[in-house]
Image: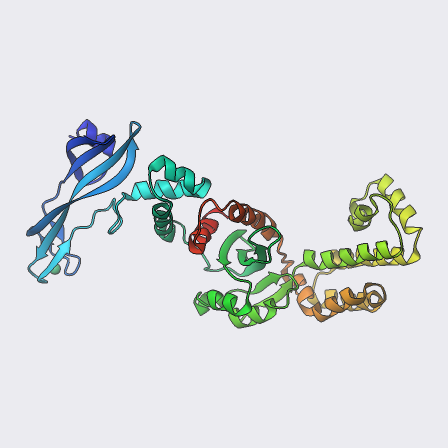
Length: 382
Ligand SMILES: [Zn+2]
């Protein structure tokens, strides 16, 4: 029968043979129950003990006291292979100074807390915590690229107001972050994404992006079977910006006029409709530009195929050229990618929540200094 201390310890294959208190810590002296191990090379069991060297590892605290385990590290000899074998224990990762459950506990806490705080609580250095976090994240949550058909790519600035970007890749269907790249440069993004095997990349059918010039080349090189989809909301944002510029050009300055112009017509209240009408009466030019904005939104709403969407968009562009100038030109240059939206109505909408989380984590820093630790953390959280 297990002793009360063994029940408390709750680790397989070992028993507590003794206990000591050192400098405010509890140290359990463990004994391994089995006499033999299976040779990892030939599978035969061996009892031939060559050497025992005790190691001390950190474990979860017990009754409010930090706990260390003194464990005999056993070295056996396999006659069959003529090799020395060091025993591996299930509750310890290879060559670590902490139990697995201790490292996993630290990992969980790093996901939600500041590293400095954990460092104070546990008496570990921030480097030790980063090391633990990195190790556990390598096996706890592998981000799954398998069978990802629709993805979204975007860039997020590391710090507010800085032109220092990371590139963020998300799974549109499942809504999770699948990669963060410490770069905004085409070639660097390509080389990171190409680390995914080709059969994984070949599954991707659509990639939703904004109108940044670098994305088409990346998509073409990395995802051989994907079409580019220029995100609907980024396109509408461009049009709205231009509409607001026209408003200023024609001298409409009434308070709330920008809001009323940019708001979707279908969402206007009765009193807002009256207000907007008064604003549009001030300028025929603004009225047409406004109607064109709404027409484009309508095209997005009603078109069911790429072909019908394209037909409507081309018709729209003829008139838009006059009022939307450069913006219309940009849309014309990207029209195929814009109309690819109608394949399966893919947008980057999923990115918004993810991007906000990423910004929060990056700006707080949480005391993670190395990018790959930050990346692991982002992949675990978003
Ligand atoms: Zn062997």
